Structures are given as C-alpha cells and as structure tokens.
Image (cartoon, rainbow, N blue to C red):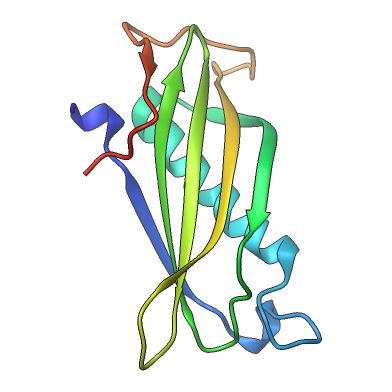
Length: 133
C-alpha cells in the first residue's frame, strides 16, 4: 500500500468538559474528533485542502467514560475524481484495561482549490474495504 493510503491515528483523553451528564463522551464531541481524524486522513491522501460533504453511518458502539483514552484511526477507502470516502474507527482504553471498539463512521470529503471549489485529485482512483496496516 502506498503512503497516500496509510491510516492516521489521533489520540485524545476524555476530560469532564467533553462529557455529557452521564460522565461519558458527549456525542457532539465524539463527532468533532472523528471529523478531525477524517479531515487529516483525507488531506494527507489528497495532498490538498478538503472539506466535509457528508457523514454517514455514524455509530456509537459503546460509551467512552471520562478518563479513558480515545484512539481514533482514519483511512481513505475510496477516491474518485474529487471526492474521498474516509472510514474512522475509535477505541476507548481505560487506564488499567484493554481498548474496546466505541465509535465508527464514514465521511465523504471533497478536495477543494483555493476558491473552495471541487478540485480534481491527481492520478488517484482507489476503492478498498481493507484497513491499511
């Protein structure tokens, strides 16, 4: 697999200001972190600016309590003329335990030029369901 399709990882810790009234990661903050990971993966792949076009199939698989480390992994699974599909998964890791899957979503991103208009991706057509190593 080429460098352009490599996964990026984003790690953060859940502090009380990120939590809901149950003491777990607020869904809006989870989406913020997931969209940041999707942006970073798409921008690295496209080698240009990108914007989010849509988010589909976002799933909150398990709560992420305050104090847990959230490890997000994002990679491009499809690249077309100017759009990219980015898969993001997240696992929550307690201070003294094993990480467990907690989040996942598919983001549609679009490469843009300096005026914010869709820009053609150079020599890129990719479609894979596999996560890069």
